[in-house]
Length: 189
Image (cartoon, rainbow, N blue to C red; front, side):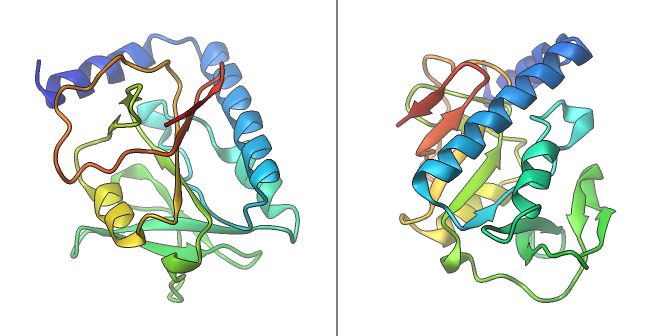
């Protein structure tokens, strides 16, 4: 079974969740994520907004909670299709959000945030394993970002499903997560 087949299989499995179950699991993941943020005292937080057609974790409640205080700076990704990289924009009350590439809600604005100032990044994924490796969407956007960000940045996956025992197709450029949060628990790697 190739990584592509694994990706397709787990995307299909996610679609079998009822709307209610998906919403409940997402809420529990967001609660766990906020707990981790609070315990670790993260200030500069890179968070993605959900790609709903792919049934990602609904991060909107976490986004609203974090942007509702002055304690945290939320940074949102924006896809640059020309360079095949992510750009990083600090969110504030005047930031405009629009549906961009791939149907992802992205920030508009020109001032990029220095990723060296991030404390934590929440990473979208399709599935993950017990070593912290993930199956993403195959574009390599987060792989490039995580490689640029270096080792000090805490990398946290957000998952709707429990881990696989092992992803046999990890590549040399794959960067493992430090944590992955599911509706049941926080996995540490």
